[in-house]
Length: 127
Image (cartoon, rainbow, N blue to C red; front, side, top):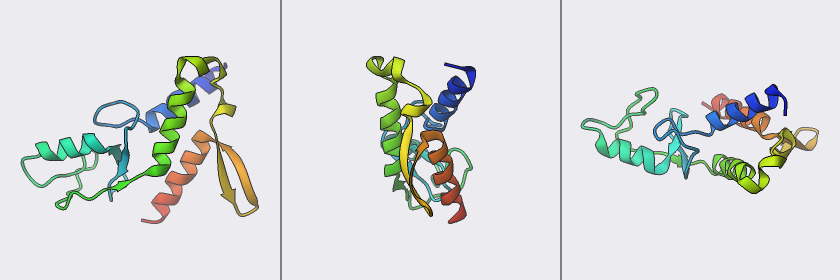
């Protein structure tokens, strides 16, 4: 594989990594500030807070400890996990990371990294 493919895979894994445990997300949740964490990690982090719980990244306060499960992100992480397993290691190419995406011109298959970028930009435009 070329360097670009390796860089893209590394970048994708970084985007799918929890900032608290530094592992691929497990039950990813999104805070209202749009930062993502493993459900267990953010709950444990908030339990350890002496004051009003906040986001570990931007420090926005969350007195009601609200978050939403991110099912899309969970699915993407699961695909990366399957493709990273030993039996699939040799098949791990950009073409493996495809997701189906509905566009104005109809359905399309996009590389996973591109779909994740589109989803992130759509989420930010809703804020």
